[in-house]
Image (cartoon, rainbow, N blue to C red; front, side, top):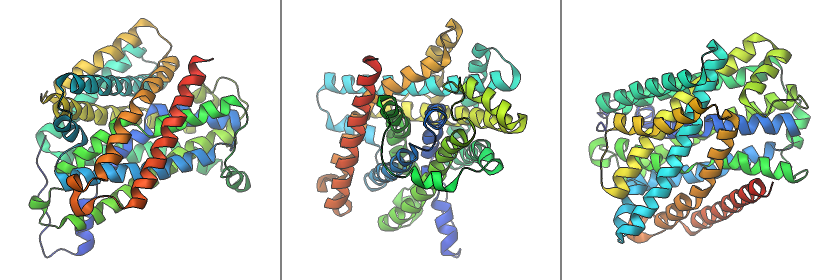
Length: 415
């Protein structure tokens, strides 16, 4: 991993210094716009209209708090969450067991993202899914090579460029065919309509709060917001981080909401929209080739960006918990193989996406609970530890997310 970028010259204006500090949250925020999010939000809008708007908004608020705590942990301690857990779990077998669940979560994340890229290439160029997966994996390896050789700043620029493509691709349809404002406001009232709406709400939140984004953000902040290299105080860095997280979550939340609103306004009641291919076909039929193509391009950018960030998180998990550093490119190749095997087997890609979200649900408590606990400890963060209200909010968010993910598992396995 590259070292921190050179700080701006002292003579630059304060706002330029703030701009220099932005970036890690935008990279981590790509995890909130991966193909799993697209599938969940599109299905929710197509099946229930504006009913679950409040779930997207609530999930984004919780995501802000969680990502800020993760970044704060990396800035203040100079270590990532996996590193702190690796040094804190003394029992070797317990540490390996913890790594195993985190590794499975990282592989499930990678599966969803490679599938998303492969489906997008199939929609755009009619490529077989297996070759789409190979191309997606190869491009992500190139992007990781950029991160390894050119450092975090260049990697951030690449990811942020893809983030812009994602935002345009998924949001364009909303401007072409705007949703009803009154219905959107009505969707902010928390409620459900039957068991399946609860299942979809849990899926939206499960695809929003992802364990690997928590692990990755602490490492990204550690690499970029290093106090001695930046010449800035910790408090100043934390202020910049709040801006960084706020901007990233505003973008991610707006795009996720746009996906749901696009489906609610144009696809409600249309059959077959519970798959990415079906959603693309429905958009093509109802809104034309331009909107459908932009959607597919956004999906491709989503797969490429999120799988690169996922590989970065996986390497940090292995290094922090097992004290083994594996080159990012080698790590990328290892996690790519299971996804290619599933694509080559002819397994339904949408079903694979659903199963990957189930695996992610198992990993939520193992990332959230330690994060809230560590950031509340004076022995870890000193004067920057959470205030009691922050810890309480983090605990409430953790309980709600864990409960909803348990609900998701019960509903899925219970039929």
